[in-house]
Image 1 (cartoon, rainbow, N blue to C red):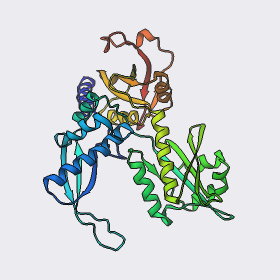
Image 2: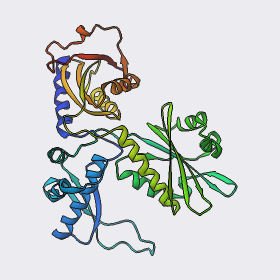
Image 3: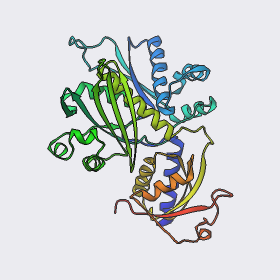
Image 4: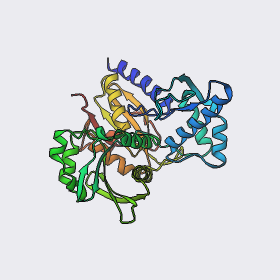
Length: 366
């Protein structure tokens, strides 16, 4: 039975690796859509280049520019995996449906990543961290928490801005529970206890709080705090209008995420081997892969060996120590301390010169 599971795990792992991308519930990083004038070949070609530009920005964290961008965008049609036309369902302010068609495209992840590597464009592998956003606004002597249900247009703009980079941005419900746990003054003074308690009901990796106010010269100012575990980073954005200052905040967030999870060109970073026991079914393997995909600093994962329910995985990251610390904190893994390093070597070393440096037991779903 165990040997059969091992074979299925190897097959499943090959399928995951060959896809060249983590599976994400939050966003498909390789697809997009734009409004085109018609279904003709010229409009489609223009639309494909625009969508590919969006996808490259999402994958690399930066817009496509220069000679490499020209090569990439010129190959847009050859990278298409599937496409279709949709009828726009968003009405303009006058109530009319926009003229044209929505072109939806998904590009071949493997072919696109190979082309990106050839052009020296680094790719940000893995799921983007989930960001929970709390906003408060000062109007005269009043300070209030903003409610997504009461300002849906504003929050739609913020979600769209975050989606440019594939960042899952979520907002609190602002129901009675939220309102009784968190007060506007808590955001204003960065009261960590209240912010963390109010955020604990929502799945998230990072917390972003924003405080909006106007300056004497009528300029909009937003003071931001980015919470990551026990640390907090502060920054400020300014703009002539309310939506602009918030969009600038999401862009500043992206710059900080990019600095933390700098995309690496293929071959960059370091690989480390870890051993994981009790992965005894394809369902368990899938759950493990989803959890590993949520580790922000992890660039990619390769299955090097499967022996029954024991896996040896190669993890590539810019800094090994950071990834290992994150794995130690993952709730589905239990570290197995006290195992001599020599005993952790697979019988047939998966990678010459590399030794397993950490062992875990998979406890997810139990």
